[in-house]
Length: 289
Length: 167
Image 1 (cartoon, rainbow over the protein chains, first blue to last red):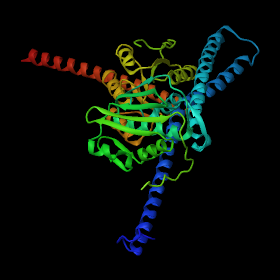
Image 2: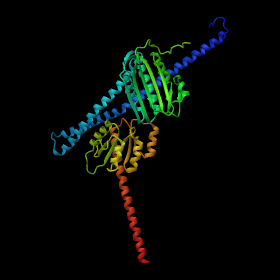
Image 3: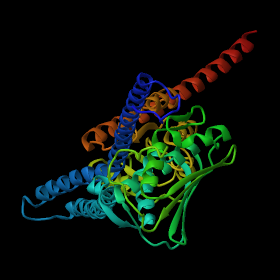
Image 4: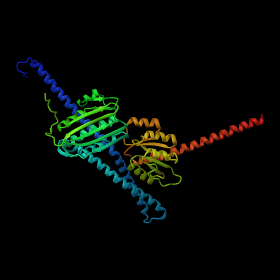
């Protein structure tokens, strides 16, 4: 309301209108960010559904084999004797049961692994402060996004020993999911992705590198502003990077992007081991200006 | 892997089925079920390349392939199957059922059935039995057509000889 004393600033009415406009834009942006979160959650859910299809398909089929095998055994035993001609049938049933029991164990282990990788993403809705090994978080992002990975895409895990970081675990999981998803989208059906962890004084550095088409310099400069897409090269980052950079900032860290058209891109996240102040609220920090 | 993961028990006279999926979990479950409930022999492969090598030598009536595989996707694989064994019935079994790929599969490789994971064994059994029968009918038809063509050639030669004899 009150402009700097003595200076010929904008009149109070104009200032009020600007403030209102600013508040409206902020509200709209918050809404977009929250919509992008929901859509990113939707993608994760779709991915899990897809990942569960294989072990569930096997379990369902095997359950049927077990009950059919049992039915057949009962038929053979009905007359309380097993003759020569039935021995072959018995062997077939035993072979089938043996095979499916072994597969069931693998299938259950697979489902358990999927649920475990999910836990980090959901626990405490991202608002619980914890000590996180970023390598485990990167691994869980790889398995959660398996369905988005092109058939001829390699993922190299170049992990150096790093200490755990104090963070909002659920939110950092989201950072790695976003970065890895962008990398998968950038390389498409064929390419290489490298995940790196490095230790530096008082911080750790996580790099997600891809051999995708790269990002032109003009776009690279605005890449963390949100709404950035380059269609045609299959990069549609939308608000993902805006959210990502905000989460990193909330942890007292920073994120940078390097890219060379035709060569690929790298996203580098610096995270302090113990952030000075973790902002637990969802609202973006006020502009320092 | 250049050899099949496992060869099915040979049962004389019955057909053979090839199952191709990079998940041994799926191929093992399908083999256990089909060998228990049908008279067919089941060959399992965890890579499309190895499957193609074998299919060039060993006749099968039905090929069931996953969609998402390294090396090549299920559609490309089934296209090559069509080239090497045109009478084998082609089935795509996929956990990633998008409409565009379904259309592509049906139009480009003459797909017999598009089956989604998780599948129903009862449905699978019916599809496989019909698929084997269909393949056998094609093979028989082809043999009949060849026999007719041979007979027709013989007749033509005979007729030419007759014409020459009477001229």
